[in-house]
Every structure is written in C-alpha cells, then in structure tokens.
Length: 390
Image (cartoon, rainbow, N blue to C red; front, side, top):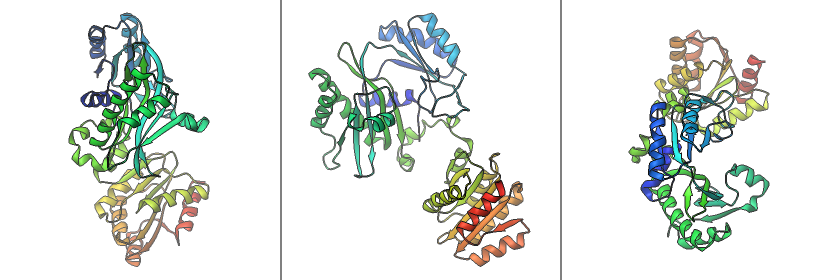
C-alpha cells in the first residue's frame, strides 16, 4: 500500500525523524491559507508547493514549485491544484492533483539519498545511502553502483549507532552532521520496523547550511499482508489514487495488476500467472493484466475476477489458464459461466483446464453453450489467444 508524501512525513514526525514545517491541503482555499501558516511557523519567506500523487518525478512534470513570494505561492496553488500531472511513473495519461503540500523552503547545503527496504538476497532489512541525492536511485545504481553504500540490520540486535556513523562518514559528512544522521537513521529504522513498511525512501535527504539533517521528501510503502495489525496505517489509503479495477480486486482478495496489453489473463497461482504472461509474450502477444485467483477460490471469486477482466476496454481476448490442485477445474468453469451470463462475452475466450475435476470442468463449459476455444495445453492456449488479437 502506498501513501502520500505528507502522510509519510506525519508518521516521521511521530517517530522523531526531522522533516520541514508543512501543511497538507485538499482544496485551493486550504492551500492558500497554509501559505501564511507555514511562513509564520517556520520563519521562512520561501515556501514550496508540492503536488501530492502516488508517483515520483513530480518536479519534472511541473508539480513542485519553489516560491519566494506569497504571490508566487498563490499562483503555484492555482496552477498545480487540479492539473493532470504527467511524470515518468504515471504514464502518458497522468494523474489528477487533488491534494497539495505547502512546505517551508530550506537553505540546502547538499542532497543525499537514504532508503530502507528488505534485501531479498540476504533476507535482511538494509539501509542504503548515496551522496547522489535528488536523482533516481536506479540511475545511480546503473551508472555508478559504488556510489551506493549499504548497512544490513541484524535482526538479533537491531540497528546500531556505529552503522549510522559508518554511513555518515562514507557520505562525507562532518562530525555534527554524522551525529544528526545517527539520530535520524535510528528513528527511521524504528518507524520502518514498527509500521510494517516495505519501503521507506527519502530522496533527497538534505543537510542545511546551519547543520541540520532533514527529510525533504518521503516515500513509504507498506506490506499489504500486515495491514490487519496496522489499522491506523490502513486508514491512510487513498483509493482515488489507485486503479479502480485493482481496488475492486482487493475486495475479493484477488492479486490483480493492470498492464498495457490486450490479452486478459485469469490464472490460479502466482508462478503460473507469471509463466502465462511470459508465454503470451513469447508468442508475440501482450498481457493486459496479472491476475491470480488463488488456490482455493470460490465460484463467486472467479466470477468477480472475470468481470474485472471484461471491464477493461483494452482487452480483446481472454486466456483462462488453470492447473487444478486445490483449485478445482469445475469451480473455475462455474465461475466463468456465471460471469458471462451476468456481463456477457464480446471477446474471444480461450480456456485451458488441467488437474482436479478437469473433465467435469470441461463438461460445464461445453454444456453452457458459450463460444469457448478449448486449448490442449498452456502453449496451445497462449498461441490461440494471440491469434485472436492479430
């Protein structure tokens, strides 16, 4: 689950992670009022108006503006609120800006990168840092991986101050700044762990001309599987920033991600779903989604999954690829038939069934009267699906 920058900074404040003075706004009037409030509290004449969407690269798209006067800030609010902000992470359609963050301007001395996430190769939480802040960390990793320094957290003892000092000196900070960074990282790692985050990224982390260390930006993602014990975090979810199909899928506990292709996929099992997308690509097609209905889905769940696929206007063919183990083939067939009767079928449907109750499932589809293209195996199904859209 993703949250907005201002929400992440509110969490940081609670844990003692230093952040600039700021006010969030959900309307232009609130944002205009926030300008004077931020100036008064921070004592800074400079404010920054930031668009709040679930995507990075906002500055490149015109969604972040540094304002030296009140008039400039007021104009920035009018320009940014309600705009369709296009960034490298939103795609060409962009996202509508419905929230703003008005924040104090800072006398920045240097920008750095700091991130906390799980390193799956070591199976441990890792803190990464780089002196090249303010740019995409992926670019730094590709161009000069030696510029990224890391510290792995031993779960038996937790984050240690000596690790913060080691990172600080590796970044070239002076003694006072290293001490500030140590306190910063101790608070940040505690926030990450206690809130079940999957990513806590600050890009940039800045040092100021008066020696402070602050999180100028904040990106925090959370482990969906832990939200049941993080009710307060769960309440921060903004479904207006999410794809409506993905929101609907979560209601039924479906693993669904919309993609840019035109072949809708309904599969049981994450590994098989990945392989299905791969084999579609191998035969020259483009998957429209990742959709795993799970190993023990009900007919109702399958019906919901099918309806989500057919609601995507870009889908020109559907490939149902089921290997029945825990999931029975007749359950899938019943769900597909129920969904088609409810929403109709306007695109070709290719079905490959194998495993538990496979003959019963095939009989249900045959007797339904649906125009189903039966596939002999997974490769045959992928070929037939691609043929329908070429």
